[in-house]
Image (tube, rainbow, N blue to C red; front, side, top):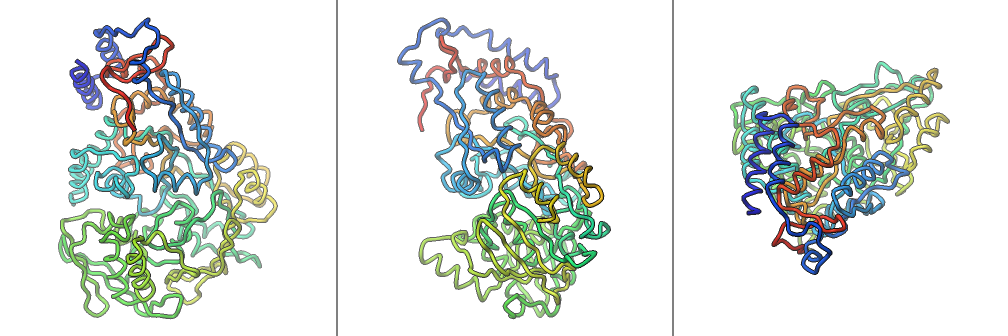
Length: 577
């Protein structure tokens, strides 16, 4: 009986997602389905059987309020809303580094976590999110940290990657979003507007680049930003500590700001959102499976060694094994790499429409003479690339490593003979883990670029307006998004009906209006509304909280409530962890 109800519920959900019924019709049909079932537990006192079926206390991991107010408050609101379904939901506040380590390396122990996907240039093509976040093969130790498994999704995700016809690929990208909307692997919250500010008496406004979907905190600003006077250092803030500087480890958004500047890329995604040659002199396609990359002449690493085609081959082949799991998905489409002279030839397994963006613009160029022995030693010790931290990281990018006082300050120095030599002298990142202190530091001139702000956007706007003779605010709709991530490995989150009920209950409109103060839009997909062509406009927002509708979904799926209103698993189901 329970399986029959689940099948009917899934059929109703799929029909709803396909546009066959309105939200009101969907919830009415779900309620009618639930009403056909008479549950023996209604009105009964608690029993041992009910105790076995009672859903345990659920916990949401979140960063502290001081350094991430929006995340903390969104988590708090979500916990309160989900609790109304008959659950006990608690917040587990952890420092960012501890939270990240728990989520990433202890994948069986946590229930839900607040999370974000930051806007990076290579994510302006939807492929990175579509393939890496939800592909089954990435569940064990890759980006699919929630453990979502759906073979049908895998097929469509790979098909969009291989489709070179733009319109046909768009249809497949839209289909992946429809599947995600049906399965609700995440409880999406918001597409925030990226809020940045800078001192326009220090930096020439004409050289501060507002990149599509990213904002002004980007590679092009940091190499092209031109000082107007004697202050020639970019001085920025970060709210969470730099945890690692490792070209084979995507350890967080702040860390990526650093690696983006220390290491070169074959291509870079330009301010217009399109890939353009960077360390490459040219990138030419021989056919749909063959790409020739001509390396610029005279490139050198920061230790003086030349950048050679062998380094390029090493940078793209090292992640193909098990030593570099985080970058493995970005080289999976490469069949072979060879070179002749300064021309490196990439042969692909199948056509990959996103290859220039998601691979050539994604992977760092790594010195083989440094990292080959490091990887060999790590492998001999049973470790992977993420375990290593160089004392002084060596790349070939426009800035070189100078000094890192952990939890205090990180300094990079401009490389004057780089092909994209920065106009600034240094790039200084200061750890300021308090939003109010960061804003005060901008006003006082202790920093001249507010690169990390998660506080009240209205307060920021008012502050900048009161200092308009010195400060400029730039707001950009991000390609990234904020969300609540349920761990599918742990019941009840492996149940699509339960995740759908959470999404219906949460109330994203309250998050956008009350927490982001309108400086965001409701999120419903891994593909941001900033990517107009790729974002599926036909999928449900689940923007308004509907507790009764969420309860109807749970009831139709066989969930019950005891006499005290506590939610119970469907009959015959007990909790095992």
